[in-house]
Amino acid sequence: MMKLLQTTVDELAAEYEKEHGRNPVKYVLAELGGNSGRGLSGTENKSKDLLGGISVELIDADLRPYSSFSFVGDLQDRLVRHPLLEAISFRGWRSGPGGDALDIQFYGADASTLKNAAEALKTELEAFSVVSAVEDDLAYDKEEIILELTPQGKALGFTIDTLGVVLRNRLNGVEAASYPLGPRSATIRVELPEGELTSDFLERTQLRAKSGVYVPLADIVSVERQVGFSTVRRENGIRLISVTGDVSEDIPEEAEKVFKVLEEEILPEIASINQVEWRMSGLAEQEQDFLNDARVGMILTLLGIYLVLTWIFASWTRPFVIMSIIPFGLVGTIYGHYIWDVPMSMFTVVGLIGMTGIIINDSIVLISTIDEYSKERGIIPSIIDGSVDRLRPVLLTTFTTVLGLAPLLYERSTQAQFLKPTVITLVYGLGFGLLIVLLVIPALVAMQEDIRRFRKAYSFALRSQNKFIQRSFLSLTFAVIIWAGLTLGFMLVSGSFPAFLSEITIIQNLPETMLNALLLFLSGSFLFIFVFALVGYFVFWKSKNMLQV
Image (cartoon, rainbow, N blue to C red; front, side, top):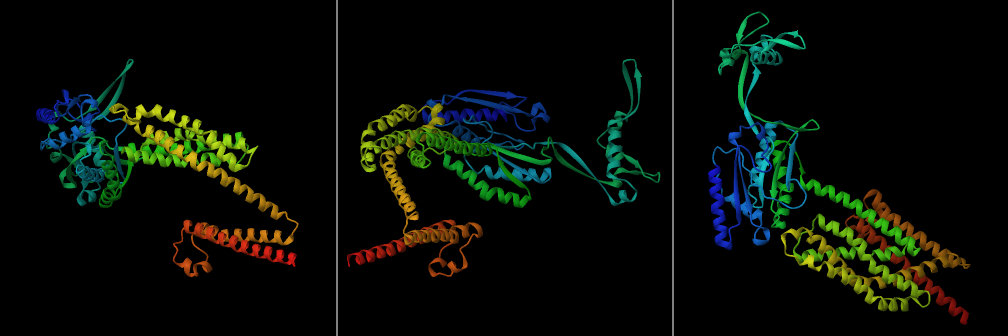
């Protein structure tokens, strides 16, 4: 088998040299009596004569237009398996965190059932060209003999526990006595002669029943022979088996498809047939743990930025205007990954956390200038003059960062590709954020000023000496609050609209979701304000005419 594998590597290397003009193999190192690299599972109980491995060193990744995964995949498809081959695994070096890209654990059944589920999964995984090095950690071992009492054996008073003790003593011997001998001790063991421990031992063995009669072992037990397992893995007392493999990084779409098909189709079907439970582990579990930590880190980052901005600007609302640029940076990040055809990864999340602190610099520069100008002139002239005066600093701040990252963005070296998601996040997030700072931030500042004026006017109306105006605004406030309780509050508590609202023809066709409840609240609030404005205008017009008369 080793010779066949070496021949296959040489033939594949010759084909690659013919196609690409250069032999991709630096050297091939064969090893007998062990596995190269990370060994196969269960080999510690195997004879060294049954183990082997081959290490293939390829030329530098920058000197070939294909990856090691492509070479390993072709080698895996090309090799003819020997009928007596128990297990073979094709592994290639991968970048990123350690661990298997694919690690699926089955648990909740006996070892044989778990092994059957693992074999079924390995058969399904072999159909995917991007998956290699598929193996499980429950290796077969020596043949086991399973004894089970027959009805005759039970009638004679034998139990499986006593049978086990008797057979173990006859095979391994019994310690009859132990005598001290100075600083040491001497042990006397009673064992059967070696001539009696032959292959027909079970057929010749006789056991004494409670009545004193000796009966053949074959009459009181049924014997079943089956292949056992070298090591059964347990976790928290639960027997489990892991199926691991590598997934090629060359085609991210295919890799994503593999995980999707596994979770939605293959694993549920195997679990249903074999009555086992399953879970994803390996890199998938590591990525989930990382995302959970990154979520906490992102929240703490945003909270820290907000508190610092609140302290500097002495305002609870101004930081929201400054930080409103952050979601738009995420939009630029998504477009950047789409343009470069690079999948979003853990390094994208790292870049997002860093971009969050960088992208608000332009907002701070612009809003600080607007606030300074607004002390001497109106808000609209301050916005215009501040945007004009800060245009050059904003452009310089962004362009220096983007241009500094440009060499990494256009780097073609394979060793630098893992940084691409982080660089794309920073470059496109900051670049897109630049346009938003110049266009959206001034508009948000103006909107905040309008809201401030509205809040001031509303507060003045509530403190008005005119009882009619005061009661009108209070009535509008209570109407909006009650309407919020009937829509948003009722949906939040019960998950549906109130019965009297559901009977309205327009609302009957609306799905009972939180989004529709929010839209209903906003529509009703707008209607209340519109009617209130019409009534107020009519009262004002009527009182004005009465004064003229």
